[in-house]
Image (cartoon, rainbow, N blue to C red):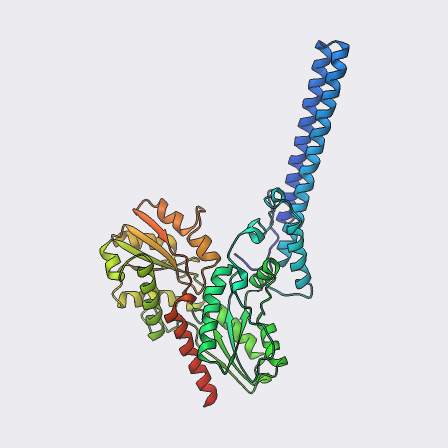
Length: 438
């Protein structure tokens, strides 16, 4: 899904998609009102021909009441849709990747307008990105999370940078889990948080009134608090596009601190080709397979393989040159002897990680049972919808409809809650802290 909203055309309409949809809805409503009026007129005409004057007067009154009721109903439907469309427009306004001077007010306005809707009106909310799920989907208790945006930081700050997720349970278990582990390991450093996805920041703020800093806000907060030493630990998997953007943001603030160090992402250095693996990739491969096998009820991957079970670990995918990382993770799985572990990506980049390609690999390997699990720090939108959703293009649906497997199950858990992964971040942070001390 693109982070930038582009105007689209629908049929012959040259307006943005939302405008075209509104015109189509209005046209349908007008047709419905015309049909209702014609039915009432035909009923009145029939009564004129067959009824005595007294009966005609009574029936005419009944027809008039029915017509008035139909018109009132049509007016109510129009009002309901208008209220829903207003909320959709407000949601679309904050579904953007850039924070503005009105973002806080816009988030408040969207939530207040949503709360004012009836349950029936909420079901009508539909926009470019807006849907009833934006405010209506239950993703867990936001109060279990900690935005870590307090002042009084001190001299040493450990800024944990994540893409982010609007799924409350995953944010608390995966992202907060990593942050908590780092704070425990380094009590002399104040752990703070930044998300790189403004879309997610706005969503969480509007829905849950939880305010999370973006990169600029977090870095400026550090400056305002007189931080001297800044260590940044990204929770990203690799040196990809998100990592590059993070580094660029940090570079613009480097002269504000006495020292700045950026720790390695989860999987460490990328390497030149698919054959290059490292200790970080090995640690993650071992950690996620151990957890997946245990969750599925097996002692280890070998026991699962003996029972005909394959595990498919679905990452995001990227057009960045770092996409070779996914093939490297497959190499790592093979190197560990996990014949029933397969790496895929939502975006299908690299191409051999696309869903249809992975289905062929699992099928050719002879496994009849499949467990899908995210290869992502969080179990957010991609895990819940792209992987485990019921839509026809979800991975679960595609595996089921291939007809090649006896069962297809899902495990919706992020990497961030696995202790071995948390400790890998702890080790990366230590290297960064040590580099400042030298």
